Length: 205
Length: 171
Image (cartoon, rainbow over all chains, first blue to last red; front, side, top):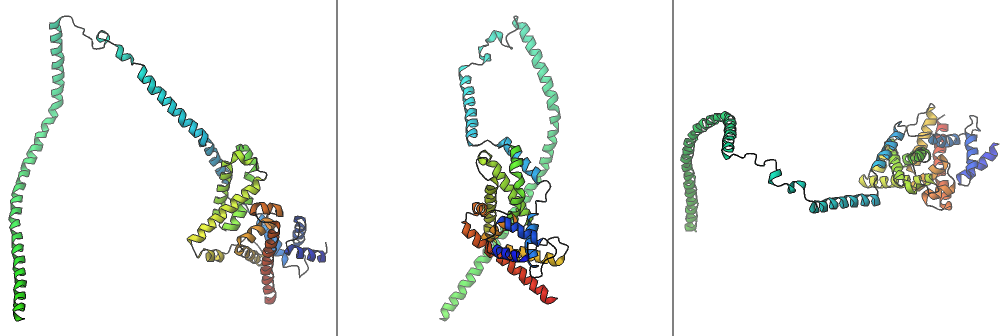
């Protein structure tokens, strides 16, 4: 292609009238190293767009990031309709359980005294009494051994006793209250002096 | 749509989405975040995705809208945003410094274009979209697209020629 043809194409190009095919011809032509001087400036113009097309996402993990995100979304994607269905199923199941609870008595309710685990096993009352005493004694022994370490609590009382001395501090504080009386008087005196100066002024007038 | 199908049909357009997002947002990280957002939105519509005739076009529309939303809130938050954005010079790795300078300058001038011209010149001259495809993404008529494309290209030419005459007069 001679440069006259190229010039024509260039004019068409800048008017936005060239086809993709013609633009490719131009690109090819200006990719050459040897160009007539007056056409040389356009080389960089077409070079720019060819370069721009080679620009790509450089992050090597980009695809994996997208695929991970998509995989996760798939697991949790409960869309509107399915969400509604899931929740209503949970509700139905819960009400069925509650209704069954009302109508079916627990098997424990049917046990009478005879079948119960703590049913009476003694026939002789005296034997039963001695057995009960033995059990209670055993319990009280264990209970006392548990209480023993609590004796140390009396030390706490000793400590608290020494705190009674604080009451003498309170006495001191009461004495301090009398100081406030002093301020009251001081206030009174100053008020009076204001009054007297006013009186003096009024008298002068 | 299954994950496998998504991998084959949707994931490969990520770089096209990225380039569009970066055209608007300039920052690499923000562009990547936006693409991630777009892809996850597409996945959330996976049941209807196969009925769409061009998933790529649909994805480009979502990307464009997200970017414009982000820019809007940014411009609202910081009045001086446009100034700072223009001052950022994005260096492209290039051996010939002269060429690199011009490429940076073109990048800058495209960043300064109005949003409409920016997206049109990007879709046409970078991605090689047909006018009909651009119309699908932008919602503009073919004629409007042609006019805006012409304006954007001429603006780029202006910068290139100015830079060239400067080089010429210096030598």
